[in-house]
Image (cartoon, rainbow, N blue to C red):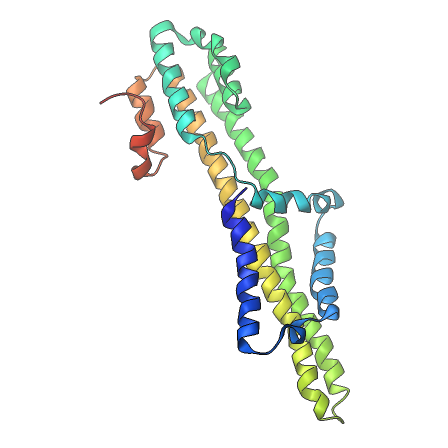
Length: 258
């Protein structure tokens, strides 16, 4: 599980609830079922209208991805690519055919098979970059869904506020009802802001960062495969791949000795 998400969202709600309690207003003042229906229900169905039903059905999966910690294997990828570079330099590219089945990543495996089959480098780049592009397109569906909902929630909060103001203005003859009516009207905006800024927008941001990390790993694999095919020295292959890694992480991932 991703502890940052798992801790962050409940902790954010705790801070809001704690602030309300410390402020001495009481939680009952901030609880309104009508506001829940308008803000959460209305914004959700607006998102449904904006997307295909097949996309909306997967909304739980997209949210779940933000709570799931992806396994980072950048170091393992670099070590495996450098090992393949060493083997191909000593025994030739065809020797990698024996190693293909040990590769777990399907993208990596396909790239090695293309190299072993003596596929033109430009064709390899075209095939693998197309796969990266398609992967990014699939990821963008969930990202855009969260982005749409994150923009709709505050808007539906304002719709709820307008609903409340209409009710308040209809009772102007009763001055004692104005304060309570105004408070009730603003609760929907409060709900919409919380839903967007504590839940939907952070999840969209996390899904975006996950996509970027996966694309970076795919680009490392592609760079390594092309370097192996061109017969680069394993040390050069390693330096090319370590360029994708933060400087403070490079020494941990080094394979060849200086």
